[in-house]
Image 1 (cartoon, rainbow, N blue to C red):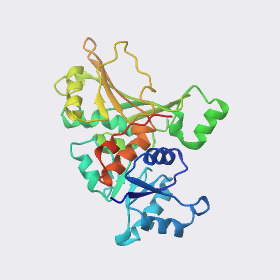
Image 2 (cartoon, one colour):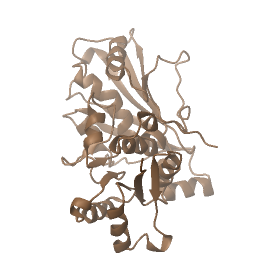
Image 3 (spheres, rainbow, N blue to C red):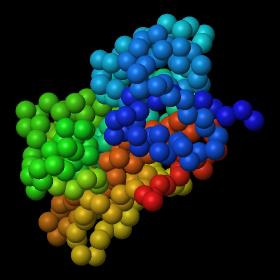
Image 4 (cartoon, rainbow, N blue to C red):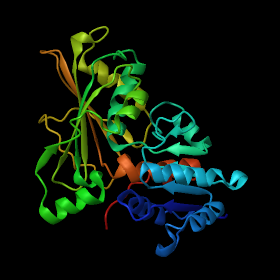
Length: 317
């Protein structure tokens, strides 16, 4: 059987390198690359796109849009496209690449010509919120606040260099203008009518992520308990290999690095029945299920590869 061919446009970035490393271990895939001197040559990139089954875009938004136009100009020779930028995540002509978001989302990804890979923060937030909105436990106009902390690898090359060269701050809030680029997809795919407040932060550790959402239970329809929220999440993700609803930690603590070098997403409901409050928490590797791992899962679906490829975990050598 012929191998599926994949070209990563922008393979030298953090996400591109992560995708390449994962795909190199998949026997059903043949990776194609351009020489370094040709990677900015439009003609060379267009010729490569015409030769492969799927192109992965690991580029800034404007460059990703240019690459999509280039690929679409190939007509019937156009490859499938997986875009890891934010350029097309809320575009109506693109399929959102969070395979577990809805019961048939993986089928939609498998049939799609163009898939937008999700952001790392939205993966956690949507993973927590969409099932509760779907179940009628969380109103779509509820005033949601999302707090999150990520390892510095989520900030790209400049942030990585700053932390690894200079030590970087131990912790900092950012995007306090409330204009973070992940907000549109978070609101749309979480099913929220009201724009959430999103407060991201970065810590002085390379990778790992926690996304948390506080809730006042008496403000929710039917005044559910934390166990009801957990049950709705469990029902939504039953049978999923990579997304698990996990019992609350006995010590009531969560640290962000426990899932590093895996493609898993863990969801928690910590609550106080006494105070009628709950905190939803998602834990993931921002470079795994939050980026490269999700991309390889989507590539496996789009190319019709064995399900085990999409669910594969990776561990550093």
